[in-house]
Length: 233
Image (cartoon, rainbow, N blue to C red; front, side, top):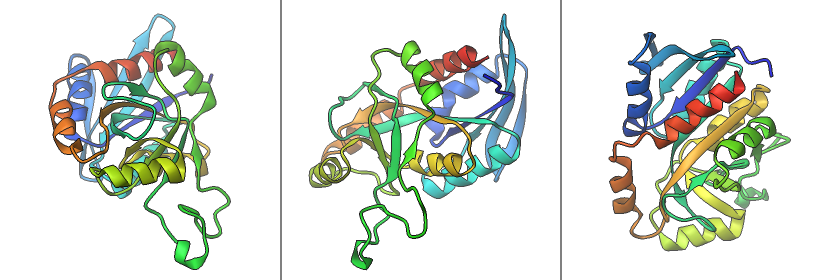
């Protein structure tokens, strides 16, 4: 597995805290990418070390896609993401998900005769996680669930929308970044993997459930990402 540089894309400031705290315990360089906070550092094991560039990209598809393009242009040959997701079907609050495919639920040209999320003149509009890194991550987190993550520029807090996402896309979870990152990676031939924790059920009470987990100072997700990187070295 020839990986020289890994990029980590994180959308939310509370989610980025644990990475920042871990990085600042060792040697690192502070960067600014797209006027966003970023860090360059190394993760080391007895087998060797690997350079990592992380960016706090901001919430939403455009922010995530732009950050991903920048990291790839800086030489990152693997892109990882972690954060919180809404649970849509088959997964509960607090569980870990490693999505194996991604799509944009809010891309809609059905009035022009296209399928939900289908993009004209684009051969693929459903993007895939790296099978190799998915297998590694499942060894590290055997209890994690795999399935479809749907992405859109909207925080889902509506029972009826949750049911629609489940029925239309067979969605397991929803978020606001992963499909945008996956799109860039797939069309740049860069392996991508996301590790997400379910904060809420994307239903009518999702706002309060999300906030209570998002503001918790937890290190679990970044610890999984760090373990995955060490397994890649």
